[in-house]
Image (tube, rainbow, N blue to C red; front, side, top):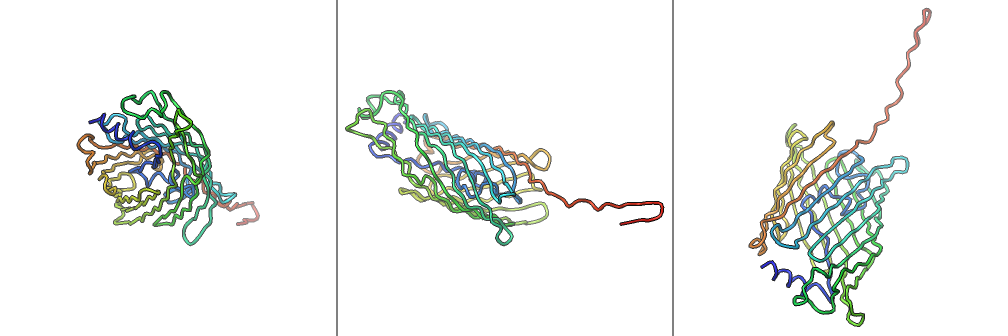
Amino acid sequence: MRKSLLVLFLSVSFYSFSQTDPMFTHYMYNGLFLNPGSTGIGISEKPVTEFGTLVRLQWIGIEGAPRSQVFWGHTPISKINSGIGIHVFNDNAGPLHQLTVNLDYAYHLEIGDGILGIGPSLGILNNALDGTMLKPNDVDPILPKSGKSEMKFDLSAGAWYKAKKYYVGLSSLHLIPNEYNFSDLAASPSKYEVPFHFYLTGGYHFDITREIDLTPSLIAKNTKSITQFEGSAMAGYNKRFYFGLAYRQLESASVLVGFNFLKDNAAHFGYSYDFILNDLNTVSSGSHEFLLTYSIPKKIVLPPAKIIIRTPRFRLE
């Protein structure tokens, strides 16, 4: 069965193939990857400097199944009403390998009780095909017998609004039309495309009691070939322990758990397990995700303390 999945993958992947970015179950923590407008803002109550990593192990049990990692860091810069950041995305799916490194920027505007961030993300996107993983009997002869890779510029843009109780974002990724050719024959190119991605995200925070809160959220993803929806609800206890459920359209249902630790809950660890709901559940036991973030709260500058001067003859306050 594993071999037949590889054959199917290869048979539809070349001549004209477009690859979509993965959907992460922890999308609510992965704002910088989805939307550069969130740079320096995120989903925290106040802007923070944040570093994080997210690892996805998809379709456990299938040889060559996707393995994805995201690393990010961003911070607000109050003096210029902006945020700057960087994120790195690495993805391996069978013989295909994708690596992106992006610099992120957002200009911040205070609107109502929240902050609107608008900005671009510019970087490089490298796609590679390892021809040594392809078997001659399984693939077309135009495909390479060794590794091939191409690097091109990548551009994204987005807007992100974070208020006290909710957030909403709209973004478009891979705005530069890029095609990659992995063929060994110049007369017979095999086109690998990275299509536009559009994301709409949002979430609302409810305080159920003093100890319990609930945050439902939604993400919609659109490319030229597919539109997909995912929803989740995360319940928190005492702002330290979290449990959630999620559903990805026609694909999976998920369970999420997490907890905060260190002083001021600066660090967060999260884990999710996806139960596959389509035909892949006959060959895969599911998908895992691991999340780790660390936040440094923005310093609050207090006004200088009032100086009291006392003398034997006068007392000035």
